[in-house]
Length: 193
Image 1 (cartoon, rainbow, N blue to C red):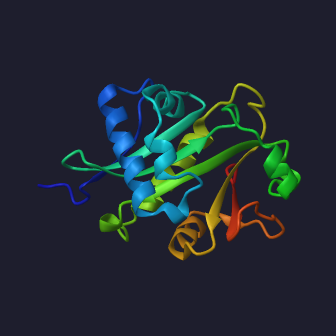
Image 2 (image 1 turned 120 degrees about the vertical axis):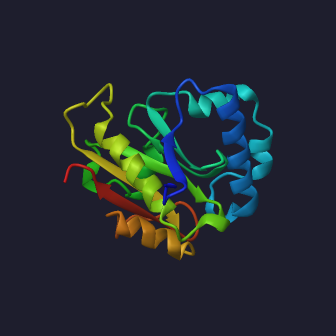
Image 3 (image 1 turned 120 degrees about the horizontal axis):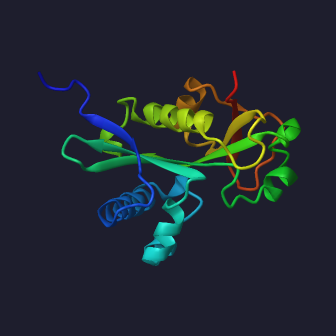
């Protein structure tokens, strides 16, 4: 009997293998080419990354990158969650009012959600988000390990489908958060409830 869901969601193992690094690089660059409007980076910048740059992005226990792959092992989607101990500078978020009363909580930032357009509307984005949230709930940060956890993300207002998926996963818009980018808003989810 064949598997009714020919897609597998996996966390990229750390340290990343050379094969997986090449697959991730291809996936990320494809996402930047196909949907540049939804990213804070661009193809030209990341195409110039060295292998060390790519490894730095992926080889950390303080963040996790998840991928969707087809049964033929082709990678077709991705999402990264940055943990509170990763190299996060939350100063800009504080200035924007994004964190509000949540500054003393462990903050997980979700970035880079993308699914190849040929595979959208199959629930893959939602599955990536659920896996990332599960990792964040189980992750034990080096500091504040007894502190409550939240997940936040920034979404373009024009990304209606993405926003709906986030809302289905329990995220809500932060009403008074002003974005530093035109046309984006911040969303938040309590991970302890």
